[in-house]
Image (tube, rainbow, N blue to C red):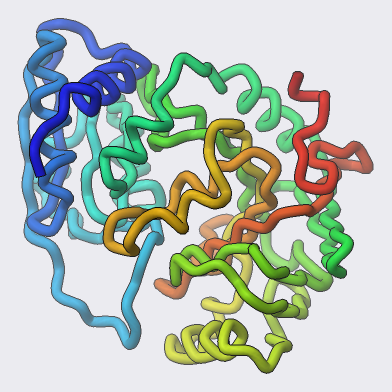
Length: 345
């Protein structure tokens, strides 16, 4: 795949949002299975900006899981290797181009505490990154959503399809992604546009109805039939449905032989009006990581898997962006039937 000028400009624009300065040493973290075109684009864009790109490439790990792992945001390639951690630590920008990303990696807190700032470039075809690189600034709107999450005690999620979830937010860790790692200690991913909460233990109860057109991002698949998830004290206790969609979900979760694979990881909603729900249809599965689908405006994102706030660790993971839901914080709607509310302007 050849470098395109438009892709270079997109990388430069994102790095400007990360406040890259001429002469700054920028560390590019990659692995042997990283998307080669994105490594090249990052290196060339930084050089054109007058920065000094330094590549750190580690071996991709052998597969040792019972089923394939996709789109977790929890790369394990750093392996706590002291020389790699030392290279990634300290002030300045780290460009994360690992396949899964450092967002939930065990080493990330140490890297951020050292004064580094991290931009995780999602493992996407550069066409996707380019299309979602615009002058639209989501910073204020996402930060407003995060403030609302931080103040709220409860989240209630409903839908005409039958979803009704009650979520306790007291003590949850909240965060947002707007797409620019512009200060020390901050991690962001590109594309951006997301507000999230990691609830504490025993916080989520109710029924989650995945409807036709909702997305199973682990499988990179639009659902063609309903799946009903019954959730008690964070854990999916029953997956209801006779379709292939339901059978695939049951099979994948069961393969982990890990109760925590059935538990909630995080909940939130998408904030990016330029991200498209239907974009997944246009790309082969190897060409996208699905970050755009997590971020499209008005989706409710329910995720299963690891949640440090609840003391749970597992490699089993589902990201499930849903349409046509209503999300309320302490009774105030932030998403109404799949549409962002005016509270965000």
